[in-house]
Image 1 (tube, rainbow, N blue to C red):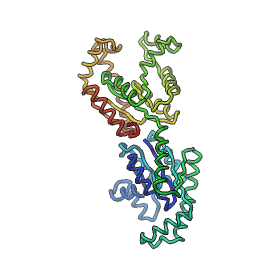
Image 2: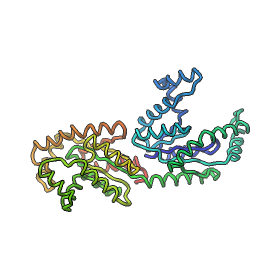
Image 3: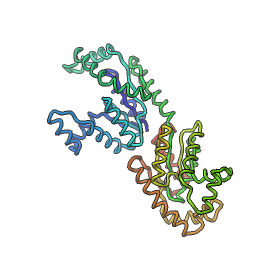
Image 4: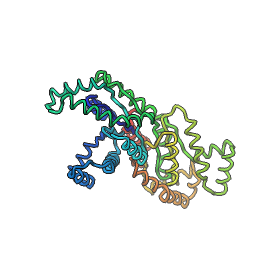
Length: 389
């Protein structure tokens, strides 16, 4: 997901550039004015609240605006990101947007400012006035509009300059050259983003083998906690000895051991495009840990898959696996298989439900052949992240 705020004075060409970005990168356009008009027309609860305020001659509060924006983002989760136009307008709204992005496990990647001199803006707007037919398009009104823009937006621009995600683009160039420069900014931002995928599914759904295949195909790092723990045992490290003792005594490996191993993997993985997590998070606590861990490295979960397979098919697969070299500890009897499946229902399904509130969880039918399921997963990834094709 790529979230951008596009700024520029009247006459900078924001409208033209917005159209290009929306279509090329499948971004959802967020203009607070447009959204408010839709809410008013639909007579929603928020729209009616705003209508009452407007009828009394007041300004619609930030509290209502942010709720409308949040609702819009949540109901358009299939977009590759959001293009904000006209928000944030104030220093306070910049903080509001930061808080909203945190709530939605996302962030504003950049504020792109199309920079045009005042004289150039005046010239462009006066030329536009010749065909617009607007009586207020005269030099005095135009200069007042430009002054208002600079006075209001300067604190917002400084806010993002201090954050380090302010990017200026020379708007004095030709339209194609401005488009080219903005496109380069987008490509640079996308190249720095990690594609972090979480694979959910009951034991026997194939998430491990599918995750490995996807990791190889898209140059992602496969993170399977079970394999990482086994590696530590094989190395004979101090951590490995602790894990072995826990295994032998039938105890679960605590997060205090698992998390440092995952973090070490993230730190040591170089020149990769992201991570595929399998077997983690398994619990609600672990889901909060993963969100926090990725946030620490300025990243987040980009895609979540849930591979669905009928329970009887799962039992059949796990029973079949129990007779091969790939046997897992919980495959050894029907009783253990059922217990492990029930554990997934009790602990991991609540995690998936939690993520459905904040992420686009894509359900994939895991019943067909491995090749067909892999193809369906790949199609979903490439649909969401066109730069991976």
